[in-house]
Length: 570
Image 1 (cartoon, rainbow, N blue to C red):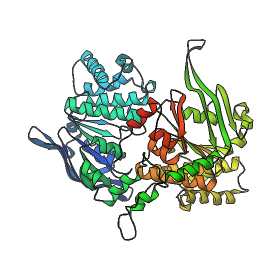
Image 2 (image 1 turned 90 degrees about the vertical axis):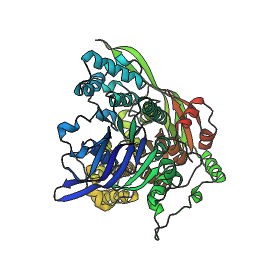
Image 3 (image 1 turned 180 degrees about the vertical axis):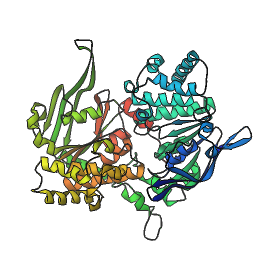
Image 4 (image 1 turned 135 degrees about the vertical axis):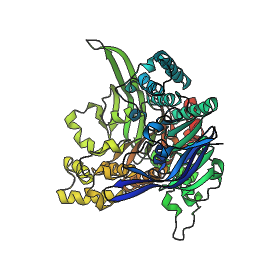
């Protein structure tokens, strides 16, 4: 039976004198007690379509045509035709929303319990005591422990997984019939991602819910959804039963998206990108086995790396956080973020560092660059002990040791042009002789990472997420480094852009003879780019070895659990 039906939806945005159509002729149906998945690249219109259901778009958005029909008690209501005060009846009570980023979706100045109560208050779900009890009940239902503490906590006092569960608790609090989940697991580690998906499945069965699940992760869509819609540039290119869509995709675009995902069970030379699937005669290129790396080639590469000397060596590294309290700031508790960590990286090698959120991966990377002070241990770069350097002695090493951060949005100054962002570190490290030479080098770097000279004078807001990450890579290369820490550089990117960035990092590694420490929670990504993998848990490295041994023959139960959480390949 139909619960929600979208008919010929067209959404346009007015931009000064032009009009851009972002959703064009959209049609789909959400059945009762079912899960419909919407997949596609960033900018394909997924989120705009979902926000349209509750009329949550900006004022400059215009519904050019279409209907969104809500079916209930043998009647149907066009949600687009409702006035603002009429559609409020549906928001939260009948249709609820789980937004993508919990830290943005929650007010940092209000306690979680108060924010979870607001929907219940708006829909008159009883007295204050009854509403508080309902919120605590929902917190418990979504698997939150110590519900009283969660109720009285501010968002910054909770982990990412806890915040996502708070959002889910808020979504189910008013007993809705439909939940719209917009990228609810983006940037979460695989274990936590699996917990959230299992929770949504459980709630769907217990509460007889329907779910509209939006994601760029095709593995999640395949495992979680009954029906699937693939969107591209505001239109549906393929739709149907999820098993059929993934087993026998009809459209080249769908096949391309599926093939962009890095494989977990073997290594490939390069990842397919969407452009690889469109040849001159518009035929589909199915020769993907040719990209597989043979075991003999893997063995040769590992043997060649073993012959290289260790140029970065970490021994007994410790980073502790001291929580203090009281007027005299007495130490109350010591958190061992990095505990007695040991590993080395050879010249030309990529070491993948994997683990759950909070395992100490990023702290380790920042400690290497002295962005966080190590409490004890040794960090040697080309036989120089970095932990003994004074602040003023670090400058020449800043040139050799660079980092690419996870979030390209906060990594770039919004008031600075891209050209200046690339030239600034060249000036600091005296790369080239004058402005014209530096500008020439900056343009060369932009072209190296797949951008153009036209982008030199543009600002960050004029680029997509994938383009911004390319700019951050170009900036890291601008000082001609020898070693780069890649801290979750592709975790928030859709699968097609992710493939392009990973291929780019591989090409740059060979072109500039770079070494990487590649930090990620995605084992498929790490398997593609790394030569060896180190698994981290609670600040300690519990397993380290070549990719094949870690992926196919894991020793620790923790590594096995990480692998079990990865969406299964066909």
